[in-house]
Amino acid sequence: ELGELARAAATAAGSRLVPPAGRLTDVLPAPERVEPDPGADFVLPATAAVRVTADPAARDVAEQLAELLRPATGYPLPVTDATSPQPRGGIALVLDDGSNAGSGDDGSHDTDGGGSDSGGSDSGGLGAEGYRLQVGTDGVRITAGTAAGLFHGVQTLRQLLPAAVDSPTPVAAAWVLPGGTIVDRPRFAHRAVMLDVARHFFDVPDVLRVIDHLARYKLNHLHLHLTDDQGWRIAVDSWPRLATVGGATEVGGGPGGHYTREDYRRIVGYAARRHVTVVPEIDLPGHTNAALTAYPELAPDRTAPPPYTGTEVGFSYVDPASERTYDFVAEVLGEVAALTPGRYLHIGGDEAYRVPAEAYRGFVERTQRIVTDLGRTVVGWHQIAPTGHVDGRVIQWWGTDGDDPGTVDAVRRGARLILSPANRAYLDMKYAPDTPIGHDWAGLIDLRRAYDWDPGTHLTGVPETAVLGLEAPLWTESVTTRTEIEFMLFPRLPALAELGWSPRSHHDWDGFRTRLAGHGPRWTLAGITFHRSPEVPWP
Ligand code: TNX
Image (tube, rainbow, N blue to C red; front, side, top):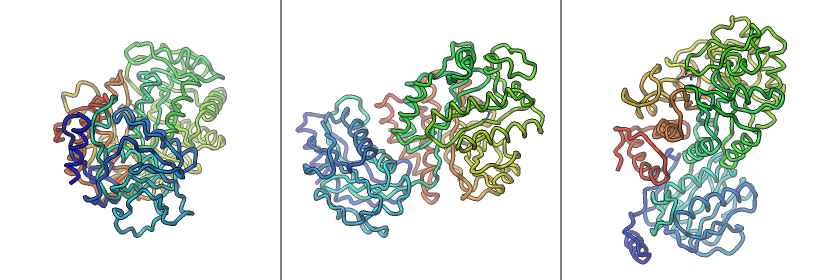
């Protein structure tokens, strides 16, 4: 009996008793298909290797898996070529683009646990991010058509191991995995978090840590709100004072800061390794007070405004009637695009209340053309909806009432949608009246409110096929530290992650909060601060 074995192993290792294997059905976000095989639990041996297809991106996923498991297990977990001999009981990561649809038998894995699979034994149907994970008595095997799929499978594997796997130091435990098969892929292509680094500046390590949180729950885009009235956070060579002058402030009068090109490259590279794409936002034409303090020539009255450290919105804008403004837009967006491997450039467009409608339209349409001329795809807040369509453009809807004819019309003209309903997805809203930080202009957002909605039908008149996905923005007027970031993200981030990833048919509040409860101890071990939502039966 496996429980016996696990206990014996733990005793042999001189540790306290270890819990039995977790449940294959406890994964979060809920996988598309789960077939438990209670007879096929697997205990990871100290001698295990991680075998991986000879492909650099797949190899890197295997290295990351080993890096994740070594601290808690204390096992060496060498990463080896998929063709090298495997000690019994290892982990295999197999990149299978479908051309190799054979049995793929690596001689070490018990495939009996796999159950029937109408999809055949290749990875066809798994798409750009899907994976298949099989746990049998002889080992674990993750198969995917892409390195991103393998990476998501690795996140599932982490969750199947006991919570102690999140310990930063070795724990003597039996590393049991529940037997069976998971076949999984996302419902929506775009699953994102936004971090506002403009209202308060957060340094590179803070941002990297947020990327880790995204990766853990299979989110794949990080939107960085890089500029606002209170600060300009990215160095631009052609307009150097943006960062040195415009970056030296933040809400509340703190020192602010900015990312050098090297800092930004580090963020983008760290994200890429975790299959997260950075979406940089340069908010235009409003939310530009910091830029105007650095370059008064962009201001409608050519006069530098005082630096702004308050939290009002809608008062500043770059002059839409000046040619110099378009030099600025083209040069800034050109440099940011050159540093950004992802396809999206977010041009903001929100709350430019003091720009007359016609001037606003002209500005946005010209800026959109600058983006498409750079070979990139436009993203903008839904205030850009009434302006002209450009190929591929994406509108980020942050309304609160599920009804928005302007956005529906933009979709009819070809736009696709990222949903960020402020009363569901805004991570800067308070959980409850006594939440010490955050806003409540879009209401209170407790965990259930964050979880209980359907992105596929949320905006009246927009079909699910037009929904690219969803994003949870964290505005930081009141958020000043990494701890506070995490407090606002957890546990709502996993709720939004499940909405973005899991099939509609798996949506289940009671199941969700029960599965989520088991993540509390993981977060505690990983040093992640979280709000102990009263709706969750935390252990
Ligand atoms: C609205 S949402 C804003 C931000 C604020 C946020 C605070 C959006 C596009 N604009 O400028 O930070 O509310 O919740």
